[in-house]
Structure formats: structure tokens, C-alpha cells
Amino acid sequence: MNSLLDRYDVFLFDCDGVLWTGLEPIVGAKKLLQVLLAREDKTVILVTNNSTKTRALLNDHVKKVLGFSMPDERCLYSSGVACAMYMRHQLKEGEKIFLMGSNGFSSVLKECGVEAVGHGVHEPMDLHSFSTFQPDPTVKFVVGGFDPQLTHTKMTKAFIYVREFGAEYICTNQDLVCPLSSSRLLPGTGAVLAGLTAALGHTGKVIGKPSPIFFDIVAREHGITDKSRVLMVGDNLLTDIQFAANSGIDSAVVYTGVTKPKDVTESAVKPTYCLNSVAELL
Amino acid sequence: AVVSTQSTGAKGIIDQFSTFLIDCDGVLWTSEKAVKGARRALDALIKAEKRVILVTNNCGRTVSSIQTMMDEILGIPDIPKRDVITSGVATAIYLKNRMKIEQEKVYLIAQDAFSKTLDDYGISHFGLGPQPFRNTVEWGEFEVDPSVKYVVVSLDPDFNHSKLTEAYLYITENNAEYIVPDVDMFYSCKRGDGTRKIPGTHSVQAGLSAMVEKAPTPIGKPSRFIFDMIQEEYGPLDGGRTLMIGDSYETDMKFGFNCGIATALVLSGNAKKEDVEGFERQPDFVMDDISGILD
Image (cartoon, rainbow over all chains, first blue to last red; front, side):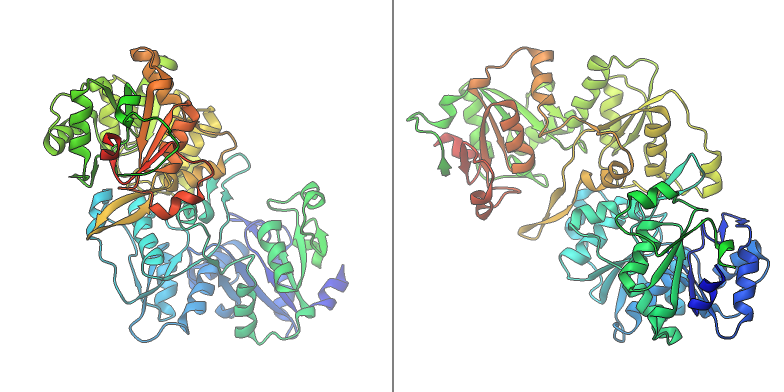
């Protein structure tokens, strides 16, 4: 499999289920990244749909699990970072966004110079109080990410911004579940935003995986022009491998996360390569 | 005025039926103000000694608050409790009389009025009110109480990830029954002279329904459960002489079709005149407002 390291120069890695599971590193992941980071002709970029951390916090997690930090924070992307970059050039002076997201996402937006309203806990409103709800007229986007504070009240305000006031609705991702353990699943961003999706009749523009918008943003920041030299490595067929397909790049699925070999057989989207783990790249 | 009718009878609509099942919001009142013609229509129904049963999916109101509204807004002071059916009441009767609930616990995602309705029927429940976020460590340690056998999911302004997760765990780990008192996609509230459409109960259920495999138990319109329940509890109705009057095609009209009873759509609430020609199936009557039954 050494030919894989020769065939590609840019390696995009999903994180959970690929480089680590929670706080446990995948065997061989540390060594692989160290080898790649030591080579000047190779680029390593982490791409995660988890929008709850800033780049700095993501790097802290890398250090905690793998024992070293990524030397360049620009090589760490969350779907939250991608959303911030997507919007930043489209917002004029004084224009804001309505945010349904985590504290980490709020920090990411601030760092990118995007001003958000609506973040945090909302006083519950009964249906008839919405008669007098007056939105902020400077809001141009409604942004959905994993929001532990998303209540029906907050979601209704988002709905009014989009449906009545024409705000553009974008979201970080639509992953329905995230596995807590082998026996327990937790609701993911897709489940949290499902109510707004049902009410609007659409998910909004997905910026994170599997959207190729995420790839365009990464490619632009890193000057990636030759897609044939890019490999996406992930554990999720619907997000990681579909992302690669949508972006026109090759992909490798690893079996250390949510996908097992029979899932690949049954899947419409096929990865270019199937690996037991990232260790096989070496 | 009657806008259109499938009926060829010469009799007025009110004379053709003995029992009138009437939706509330958009038919009798909107945001606590009487709908035009509602008072006249109700007075005529009572004078003609017709059976009037209010059937509303709205479980944000208790029966006694609806009785008060009937009195204060429409001048009808004595509508009996058993003739006011909310999906909250129907859920309580389902749990008590159909499922014969005893020690089993109910996890409730709903507004305050719903909890009071369950209290009225002596059904104990938990989960009402705000629930702080629990992180992954807390969820890993969360012990699922095996006596929670029912999860009731209705509109809840405090509904969030934590409640969604807890509901999901009772359904998947306890095989708890997932009950949906209503599945309304939207509600309307007054805005200036018109109405503002806002996400309804379905938006609270969407994430949970997507995550669990089993279909939920429907209670409210358009399911015919309430029609069957009224008859089981209070005696048979003459289906051929029963009319459902409502403002929503998806809930009220489909309820009427499912029960095999006559249907009248009013245009004073959800449905608009331009929607009518696009319906898969035409209601028996379409009218500007409920006073159309007097024509």
C-alpha cells in the first residue's frame, strides 16, 4: 500500500472512527500522521463535521489523543469553520446571521468576523406570543449546527427569518445520529435540525460533508488545484465517501468506525479503496 | 356563505345532521377572538338541540379553559366537559381506558396544559419543563428506568436535544410506546390583520421519528381514534348524520374521510379558497365560515 502515499499529495482525514475513537487513538494513526507531516511534499488536513470546537480546541484534542499538535491550524477544518468562511465574503457591513449552534461554533464565527444574533438559551414563548415577534432586519443568514439549546421557540424564530424575511438557510451537516458507544446512539445535527427541515420542506444548503462546498473552501485556502492528487479517508459512507464522490476526488473507507465491509457491498456510493485502518496507508 | 357543495339536498345543512364535530382554532376563534359567524352558528345549533362536540388537536389548552372561552367569547356557558375533546384528553383516555395504565411511567414532552389534563385523569408523568443539556459522559452514564413504558410527544417550547435523546432511549431500550397526540405541521397565530404560520407539533417529532424505527401511535385528527373513542366512552353516534367542520384539510377533512362522515371546510382559518381545487378529495361542503351551515 506504499503506492497510496506516492499516488496522492493531499490527505484529507475524517477524525472520529479514523484517527481516534473518543480519546483512544487508532493504532498506527499517530505514526502515519508523523510520517506525512515530516514530508514537505505532502499535506495533511483534518475535516470533521463536528462543529462544536474551534480550530484551537480541535488541535488540543489532537494533542491529547495523538500526543502532538498539528503545526498549522489552517489544516484543521470543522463544518463550522467552513460555514463561517462560506458566509464571510457574502455579508456586507452591518449584516448579521441568526445562529443555532454551540458555543464553539459561536467562537468560530466571531474569529471569522461574522456577527451572530440569537445564540444561546431563549425564553420559551407560547404560540400566541409569536404574533408580536419582530425579527432583526439586519439578519441575512440563518445558520444551523449542533445546538444543545435549540428549542421549539428558537427554531420558530429561525423559521420566521427564513420563511417571512427571506434569510438564506445554511447548515453545517445533516448527520442523523452520532454513536456514543457500540450500543447507544445520540441524536446528531440532522436530528436536532429535523424540525426546521420538516417545517421548511428542505434542509437548507449543507456546507459540511458530503457537500463539495466544503472541499472548495479547503481547496481555496490551500491552493489545491490538482484533484487527482487528493485522497479523502473516512469511516462514513454517507458523509465522507459521498463527500469525495461529490467533490471529484478519490476516497478510502476504513473499518475502524461506523462502516463494516458488508455496508460497502450494499452501498450505492463506493470508495476507491477499502482499508482495515489508516495504518494500512503506511 | 356556502362556497361550494357536493350535496343536492334542498334542506339547510344544519337540518341534515344531528351531531356536529367542530374544530376550534380558525373555526370558532382565532387567538382568542371570535370568528365571524361563530356565535350565530352555535346559537342555532343549540336552539335546534343538536349535539355539539368540540374536537381539537390543540393540547395547549385544558378542557376547562376551552369551556371558559366558549362562555366568554361565544356566550355558550354550559358545554359539557365530555363534549370538549382535545388530543390531550384523548391521550389520557387512551392510556387509562385502552392501555389500562397502572404502574407504568409516562415520559411527557408537552406544554403545561397537557400535564394538567393527564393529572385530571390520574395519570402520573414526568419530564415537563426545561431540561439542561447533558454531555456525552452524562449520556454514557444515564440509567434508563425500565418502568417508563410510554413516551408522549407533543408541542413543547422547551423541547431540545436532551429531551429528544431521553425519549429516544426509552423507545429503543425499553420498547416504550411512542404516542403522538397530534402531528400538526403548522399552527397559525394572529399577525396584524392576517395570520403568521409557525412550525407545529410535527417539528418536535421529526428528529425522533427519523431516529426510531417503529411507527408512533397517532391519537389526534386525522386518525379516527377520537371518533371511535367518543362512541366507546359516551355511546354510539349516527355516522350518517354526523358532520365534521374544520379549517384544515390535512387534519379536519382527512379525519372526516377516515371516519366515513360528512365534511365541511371553512375558509376562516388555515385553508384558503385557492387551495380548494387542488385537494385530492373534495369536502362535502366548503364555506367562508361556520355560519354557512345556516344556509
